[in-house]
Image (cartoon, rainbow, N blue to C red; front, side):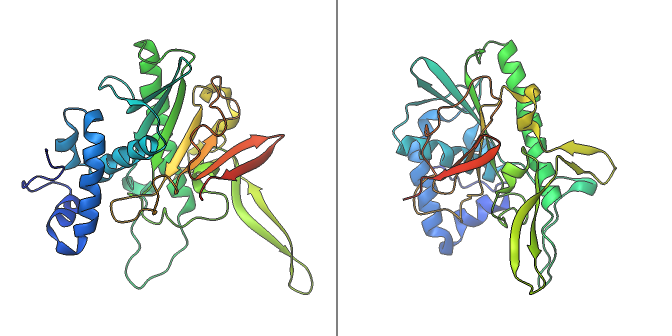
Length: 286
C-alpha cells in the first residue's frame, strides 16, 4: 500500500516533523489510517500537494473520513468540488478549504511567547470571508457554467481554521457564524450591584480592513449568496482532533439558500439554523 508520507523533504515543515519525530508516532499512524480510507478519492496530485500544503490535505481527508464514518456514499472528481454526495437524485457538493493567516496589513499574526493580546476577531473573520468569496464567486460559479454543478444541486463550503493563529479561541456563537450573520461582540449589562442582568450580541454587518474598506458579515441575509446551502467549519489538524470523527464540526444552514440542505442531514458536531429570526442549534455529539 502506498504510504501517505514519503522520504523526500517537504516544503511544509509540519509534514516533516510529524513524519520524522517519534513523539508524533500516534499522529502519523492516524494520518496513515485516514489515507488508507481516503486514497481512492484522492486526485493524482494529492500526495505531492500534501508536502506543500499539509493542513489543507489533512482537512480534506478528515472531512471525507468523517462522512464515510456516517455511511455516506462519496464520490470525487478532479474537475469539480472535493466531495460529492448523491441523495434521492440530488447532488450535494462540498468544497474544502483551509485558509492561511493572510498577508500584509490584514494578516493574522502569531502570538509571541509570554505575551497576551486581544483575539483578532475581525481579522480572522476576514480570512473566512476571503475563503468564502474565493470558493463561491470564483469556483462555484465556474462549476455552474461548466455544468459540473447543476442549478438544483446543494453546495457546502467547508472551512478549516487550523492554519490561522488564535482561531481556536471562540465565544458562545462560533466565529464562522459571525462571519456570515451580523453578530458582533457579546455584551453584558450589569446592575448597580454589579450583577449581570442581560447578555446580548452587538449588531455587526461588516468588518473593516486596515485600508479602510469594509467586508460584509451578513452574506447569509443576501440573496446574491443563495447558491451556498451551508457552511461547515472545523479547526481540526493533525495534532488536535476529537475522539470521534466530526464531533468538532459546526454546520450553519443558509436561510436564503435556493437549494436548502435537509436539517439533520449530516448529524455531526453542532448544527445551526435561523428560524423566525432566531439562531437555533442542535448538538449531535454523543
